[in-house]
Length: 381
Image (cartoon, rainbow, N blue to C red; front, side):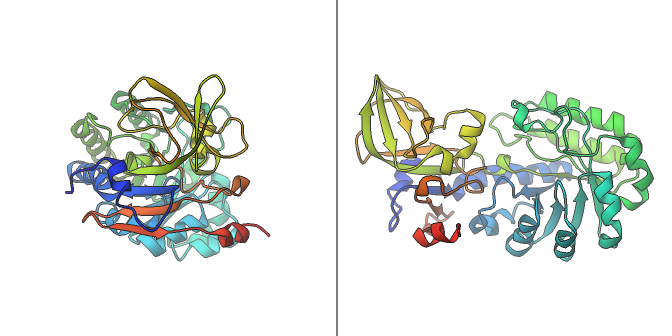
């Protein structure tokens, strides 16, 4: 595998495109994918890519060498998975419409309903397909209430086992998606034990069970062997095929948003304004009130707030300490800019959309997508 290069060194290799741009490094991507494949080898658990997190299909040819398919949250994601990734297509939606069911049926290898009412309504239309239901087990791991699928009055998944039981003969599987950025193996184990103890009578009648995504098992130092053993034991106990739905864990630390400093102003401290924006290009930072990461973490005597170029007052990437003062023209690369970034980018303020650049395994740099004014106009009416 290609040795990882500093991201700003890679940026020097990018020709024919100006900042800002998203830069995906396939060498870093393989680092995660090798762990995904290792879990499958050790446990038998299959992994399907969560397209809600990452849908940049220019790297799907690489990813599908390590993963078993995709899982979706909408008709369009299911279609993208079928057309660009292939392999298994798990079609889930919080709520399907009749027209969407008709469109997704020929694409899906499994269809998953969010509630008993949707299951009952659409069962006749999906006859012959493996059918699953999302179950809300009432427990979860999440650092943010906004992303907690088991929060009070959650609409995500059927919480009433007695409501599911009458439909057991029509089900081949179930999905339990109740983790968010869970890098604690002990926490994951407790959740799996809860699912096994509370839903054992249901699980024993199924062919497959998805334990969802949000499990950060590619983190450095994560007990991969113990994780795989837990999955294997669960699968053996209930005689089911276990699925995982990695999104961010498959692509974390592989993507960057490369920007250039346009101006440096001072209002009690230096503020460097770059040619990208939080709200348009890394929206999750704004939603969860977190700062962008820079790798390696900069250190030095010069403290600078790095901010975006929109008119939103809170358009701030974060405050960092650099070894030298930032000046106009300097490059700043924000890390972890793959998951929940490109799938959420928008045209607020008419700010230019970053291009998408991929550094391939062989070191070749591909500018796979550039956006223009015509794309901006086309997004409106």
